[in-house]
Length: 408
Image 1: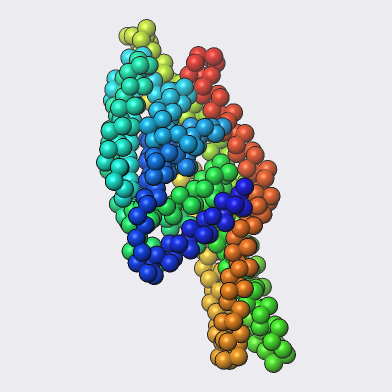
Image 2: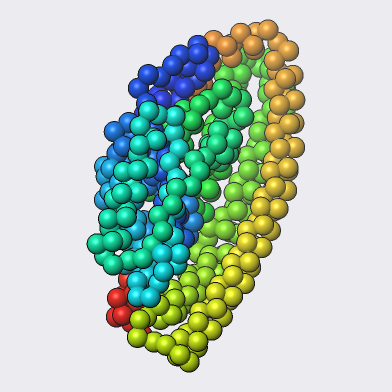
């Protein structure tokens, strides 16, 4: 199934490429993007019939909302938004009792260059308002601005296989369709860290495959190019090692369950559970006076502890990004040397002609590598993926039990 999805993505990417060259217009709206933000932030990519084709968490709390949920795909936008609010209530992010409408803010944004987007928000708002009213919840449902073209481009560029040039001239619908492909490709990865690691590793590994196939073509041209090819292969080998070192560093710092980042993330979730517990107590109807003051003080202290821990996690993330930037610079240096070695080979018209003749074959092998990459990543990180999913589902159940008063 995964390979079929990736093959479809490659085909759609080709359509985008053709359209960008020929200026063709897609008369059949492809996708729109809806976000539901409470504190958990969840994104839905919708098809032309307003049905969900992908659901993606935009923060750690959003990952909790989606954990173990296989039923979002195929829901209408209205049903999906209602489901998020329902799960947020079950897990304690939305509270009842004495909470005012301002204590439960539900923000909804819809982006997309389609004829029905303007009307869609009204339908979603009506569905969510009915749910909160029927369930005795005081809440504010608000519309927030749709993303601009530039903001959509930033999301699309999180896939490092793309460049600014790839996005030039694209409208909202086309950009959202690109984002949709990325979401479908990483649908089986539970956390943002795994998704980020996947895309960055894939971009470099596919680039290496391309260069390896180039070397194979030249290698078959005879001994006349042996010396120049030797320099090329030496640079390629060193570049490959630099990329692997870069990926190892990122994995060990941010993705590995044994990393300081993941351990602090587990602490952060425990602290969030504490915040939600104290928040529930604060809005309990039958407490007042000194008891309520004490509950509010505990909530404030818990929130301060949470913010401090969040700051530590952000610091680790920044340090990891700094190290990643340095590793990229090292790999880029060898990539430049690799380019110089290739340029020397391309001074020969014979080599140029041979590579041009083999271009379609090289592209086919690169596309095959793209098709197979998820399977390789999934195999290499299967334990990480399973652990991330299990941890999120266990934590979600803990919040549900806590919100239902089943735990102390």
